[in-house]
Image 1 (spheres, rainbow, N blue to C red):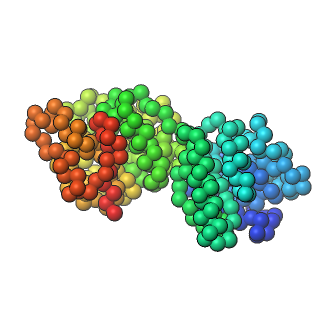
Image 2: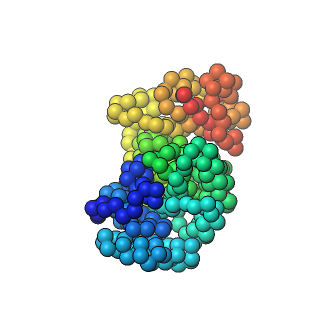
Image 3: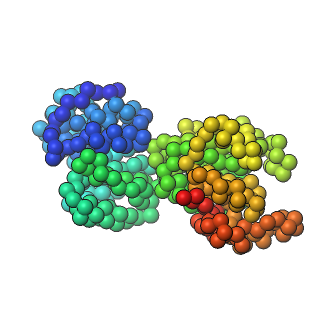
Amino acid sequence: MEIDFVPTEEYPNRVPFDVVEGLQRFIKGKVVCDLGCGGGDLLMAASKYASQVVGVERDPTRYALAKSHGLSVINGDFTQRGVIPKADVYFLWAGLEVEQTVVRIFETIGHPCILFIMRRCQNAADLAGFTQRVIELDFKEEVSVVAGWELTGKACVGMLTFNGYSEPSLQSSYFGSTIGETLYKKVRDLAPVTIVECGVLKGYSTICMAQALRELGGGKIIAYDMWETYEHGHGQTLEEVQQTVDDHGLSDYVELRHGNFYDNPWKSDGINPDLMHVDINNTGEILPIISALEFPVMFEGGSAKRDDVWWMVKFEKTKMYPLKDEYNYSILNDTFPSISIINND
């Protein structure tokens, strides 16, 4: 529900329009909570995009002001256990004690979410110092900095997320390695809007990448496969993999289609991806194809060990690793069967 914006506090205290408009992709259709919401101006601005907004404010006067605008607000200290409500996205205006505050917040939140940390930075040195302090907040494994920094109006905004990755128990050459999490983290780092995947099998890599999109607050994977028509496939159908996607709660982030990588189906469908993942019994023959594309491409294989799999040797397929420098690809994870990327800068 959109709430008419009524300025409650003037700069230098708040700059809600600049912040919210710049982050609308992450809050659209989400439950948004402002920790220390003051008079509620950021919540009113966020209500234009969010499905629900809620604030936490301990100061009685500001709490009353926010309530007077028809906002849902909790009167309490968000650093205390049991006060923070469940939400998809949290906002925090940070002071000098940001490290201690964020530690306390994450200790009370037990579900995947995004936390935007905001601070007014008066100059480049102030910005650099704040950036470094928040980067150092990677204080435990499930929390990491996943977005760059930008000046929105007079606010510096950084993004932290809880690691919501869960290993899919699905047939895949990747299963049992750490490649699934590598896929997840790379998507989270790049924050693409549209991913094209070619080669789905049971949906393992699709699920890994879709989990990252869920954390980022949006995006879509258009996943192509030849399904049961592929002569060397495992008989999986689009409908079976769709059920897997549904069971993982990721239907909003995945669209399955019929298509053959070598027919460039994304072009025929008018899709301009930001990122691609290719897993189609890759050989060195795909390298000149994917290196000619205009976006980053992750692909299964790329390591010397992967080149020595039995079918590559038996059928004398073109190896990838000897072409590594020629096509300027990087190995993201060399755990067998490995995964690599061509950035196509």
